[in-house]
Amino acid sequence: MPDMPGKAFPRGGRMSVSPEQLMEELRTLCRGRGVQTPGIDLHVGPALRQVCGIVETDGAEAVRTKLRDWVTNAVRAFPAEVRNAVLAPLGLHEEAQFRFLNERIEWLAKQQDRGARTVRRRMEAGLQRLVEVALQPAPSTAHVTPSELWHVKEFDALLKLDGPTPACTERRTVVADTDGVNEIAWSITIPSPTPDGAPGDVDVEVLHGVELIGHERPSPRRFLMKLRLPRPLNAGQTHQFALEVKVPRGQSMRPTYVFWPERMCESFRLRVRFDRDDLPDSVWRVEEALARDTDDLTPWPKKLPIDEIGEIDVSFPHPRQGRGYGVQWTPRV
Image (cartoon, rainbow, N blue to C red; front, side, top):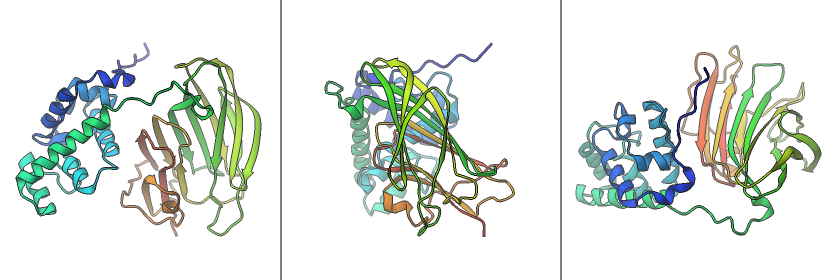
């Protein structure tokens, strides 16, 4: 018998969550070890489950990951002192992994050169800001522009570097935001094979779910393709399709894969499979990047371990339009 999917709390109904309930659940979560609490799946209330997209079948580590990803993404635009006043009490600051909340408050007080009472007030203010982010209304769809006809629910990419040439399988689940969506525009911008080299090329193959009906190259590094769906979608309906993108044989590839959302995307997951006989010296996570941040291939602080079969796996909930998300690496010399 196939596994049945877990029941998810409605993502579109966040406004039904009481702000007081969510605030109290966040305060409770700060106690003890915070998000690092063993068996955390038994300690997370319904409000946090709803805003973080936690389903009934999620185990402790899945719950911990969803909490961490939601909080870190939500506080990214907060001022540094407010951001740390949320991350440290919740046990999400790398340098404040203490057993008790009081210890994390004391650490934060030293870092900010403030008294514990001031830090606790900042914690309360930060948690309140987190509640406001969680309960902000969804964007209105009353006036839908062409670029908002559909959005991406899930984007799952597998980059394979252990074959004769780099190849990436890209699977997208799209959601219609209005009735009658029958075409999807797919685009990719590739870096030149070398920093000062000529623009490269790619080979694209449809694997399933769409028909390629048009393509153009608006600029030397940008490819734009028009894809027809098997049937029109009405608002709220979903459809999945997959493409495989290959670097032509003999053409080198810069050590980078970064996704730049051009429209709303609910989640992005990237897996990279390296050649086990030619593993890179270093791999790092790229998140919330501006274009210039990824040009020079300077390592970021978030280094990624390669597992025993030569793979890395990263996820990005709710990536922001106009920012870059993915991985880069330094090839072995």
